[in-house]
Length: 328
Image (tube, rainbow, N blue to C red):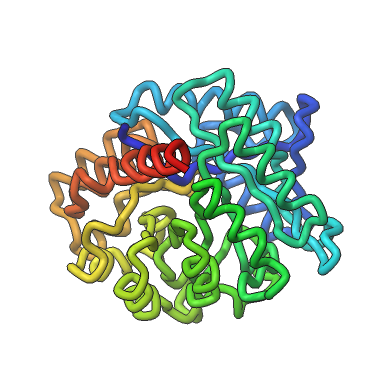
């Protein structure tokens, strides 16, 4: 299995999916228009059936790539302390059932649920998603306001460990979604999850999203030394700012713990790594000529020197978790 562990589902609910895309700020509207144009759509798709158009496009791209599977991510609401949705702080909502239905109809799609542990029914929802085939759970702590150190969340993490469901958690800065609590960018908040026995993938390896962000790569590296159940992904880094962190991510301190991810629909360009001198001109031209963004990301990562193992590690982890669950 050659897997992209980090592909966001995006939709506006035009087809009755229940998805919501909330673009209240002018900057986020502009970013959304640029994003859909980068996917080959006109900006008018934001007012049309974005759900189906985007889904068909990423399924086509997966078929035309060297990847065997993509992990498709749901997205929960930002929620208050009692678990009620805070729509004013949310920018995107993708229901778990919608992603699970997509995966049921498309074997190359591995579904990731998204559950805020403050939900009163969080554990029940986790079990339901697991029973329907969810392979992991995704959250963005600084956006969702999820502080995994809270004592009340411990039963949720223990249940995840028992079910053998990994956690894909955003670490480091964020530009695409509101930073509702920037202090939760620190990967060290995930220590209680790791100590509960959950396999954790620190998305973006704690890298900064812009020049004024704090860089948490040193903290991430220290956690990797302490916790064998921690991994990182290299998603969302083919961008002007985050691309600077590729050089350190290729160092031995992260070796064998990297999982491939694209972060689609975030733009994927070889320009930034070429500009930084991380890839040759011929590799740049080869990557630039690739029209399929999923495959373009694969080519860039290979040109940078990421090992083939980074594309297959997640498959091994998922198979290992399935074996443990059956034995248990």
